[in-house]
Image 1 (cartoon, rainbow, N blue to C red):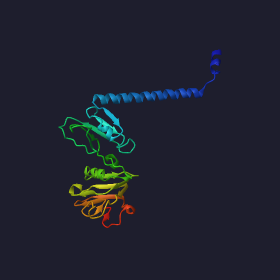
Image 2: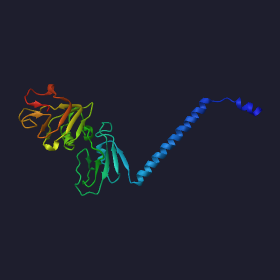
Image 3: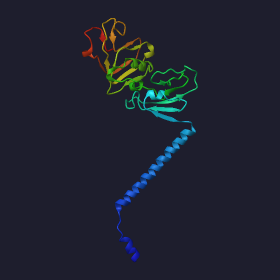
Image 4: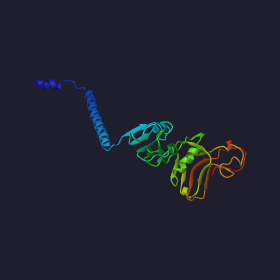
Length: 238
């Protein structure tokens, strides 16, 4: 009886017991996560899958596809610019088999084109092709590359970005059914001289030219940048 009385008279630190229980639960959950991660690594190793994570496309070009089977980029020109993508390694081809296009095909610096990083999924956002979209950097060249490598698809020009450009050409049936969707906006680049000599399509200055193709759609906000343009006729957004 005295032992029983002693036991029930001891103070109980309920808060401390709860903390201990939660700590044990967290440790158990962490152990499960660690075990699952170790399992995934083991499975990947068994199948020869190795992954590297890099910040930019420039950093990816410094990594040989012979070292890893897949790679992830956090961004395009910086790790926080929204241009990240997933790539798989291909090796063993003949020299010059792969040509770097700055988006879906990345060839290592000083590589001979026999190995490359290929995008795992279609890259359909402008930021994944190196367009800046800050309203002041000229995105004309990169935008044309983006379009030319994704004919017939729906291309997304990222929200909260203004893509300054001119002279994007969709000419010919290979561009059929291409859709340019501006979740941000298209901003027409400024005519650099006098027409017709300074024209970028025949004798005019245009942002986007569409000819001899069907099913092409251009959606979203397009700004002719009128305040910055010279007093000249034949300046068109489309």
